[in-house]
Length: 264
Image (cartoon, rainbow, N blue to C red; front, side, top):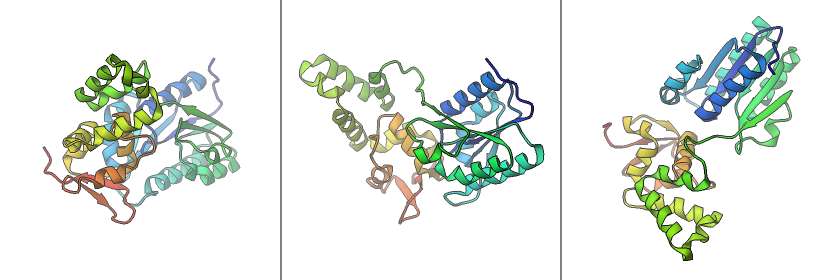
């Protein structure tokens, strides 16, 4: 049952931090509970804006593209807009869609202004320190299209991964180990270590083909979804294995990657 609030409802999305599926779930949930979303803004890099263009258009979300460099520049842009809009329009509810605990000072400030603040994060990415400051917090699980069983997660790596799954099921001696966490990590590692690994990476992250810089955290999420990177493995190490194909920046603590080859 929806609750109609006596003031605007504002949705601020950290699109660099959560998946497109979580964004879609968040919009649907807020509409179901409150009936309307008067401000819908997603803060992200140009690369993420392009990859989510159809989603933003379908959900009537206004992309706020951040061209500035720096690890937290997108977060700062979101915080500045949120404070300005809350001060000017006095909404009944502000919703921040992010799993990032860095927004805690913003949430506290908005609450001091008399605004109720709801947080929505992606399950598995949200720390306890990011939850306590909100009036309420909801964790949404990222759903992979067409996924019905754990085994269905692997074929995204390509036909070779699908064949490996079928072979594992057909062989009693290897069927049981394939279900263990260790076997899953081995499968992800071997998929990324083959001679055609760069092409597998490009298939999982097609945005890299244009030769522009891409956020490492978004690359890691895409690689894990494709079965090319284990849950706790480092995407930096994976890209570092193929210096002829991929470039990382900055050198000491890289947070971006790009393909060295010419755009297709």
